[in-house]
Length: 437
Image 1 (cartoon, rainbow, N blue to C red):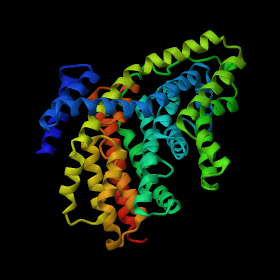
Image 2 (tube, rainbow, N blue to C red; image 1 turned 90 degrees about the horizontal axis):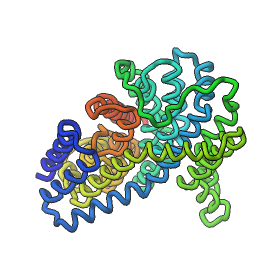
Image 3 (cartoon, rainbow, N blue to C red; image 1 turned 135 degrees about the horizontal axis):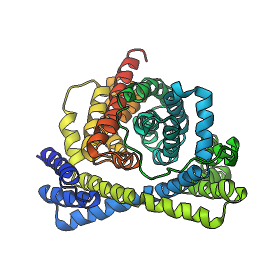
């Protein structure tokens, strides 16, 4: 019965957003309240879950999104993104621009938190799209597939790192196996799948779209890269430092502080203001104007993500994820397939990849010793399942929809299918690896 209620709630949400065209944030609240009542939650518990969900989701994302928008706006308006895109095109050529974006997304995605990577890389996608006259969706899917895979499969991202601990796996081997599994997943979900997406010629949203800057006024390549990729550099360096220092040492504490997403993005924005603005003679008033515009641009996205957080929290508090997991636990399946399946179903119902992964780990971890399956592969199978079919209850779905200016239907046909390919390919890769390790 709880599963049927969740399915009905998701269908209602689709109807409210697409057919009745009700404001998405309001639709989330209405559906959350009705679903809570159907699941026999008290009104007090429902409102508490909604408030907690909005607070938890925006508490962890709002600073990253806002600072990322500011950095992206500065990178775009200053011409830095145009400079990077130009050099990228010259290096790989127009014919292989998708592969260059995919590779960039993978390299950047390993140390970079997904949300930061998303808002940081979107300006580059839009700039390349304008330069090549190719659809932004066609170019964006390969890069975002890379970011999604690194987020779900590879340490040091939060969910895979937590799964390594719960499954008693080895961080290094999980990373090695993860890269082996990730490569085919990214290729299939990126350049291969996106070949069927050239018809999506919807112009991207206003976010980070800037008029071309004359070549002679562009910032240098080094400055452009340093400004745009400072978050990557900070996160990568601090992650390495933390691996080779003890928790109580001063160096570890400094690295831990500098590696915090809030500090990383704050330093990146301040650095971009200086390097891309003030040092090049841009008036302070103009720089602050760009940043104000960036905040206005992401206001709607922030509300939508907050609404999805409310629905996610209510699903979690109503114990739907536990109900689904316990129902599946009695099935006699290969441990890798079982872990993937439980994570996938929780992900589809709940929307949060992290919740899906960690909930699954708590259920299947005791099975590892008896089954003899490689724990590193269990981490990857669970991570792959947690990426399955992102849709309207996932914040990433709405970010992609709003940034790329798509309808809900087209977002499902592009973003959701890409995530499904990534998930299924990851499972197949884990099953094949299990035959030799």
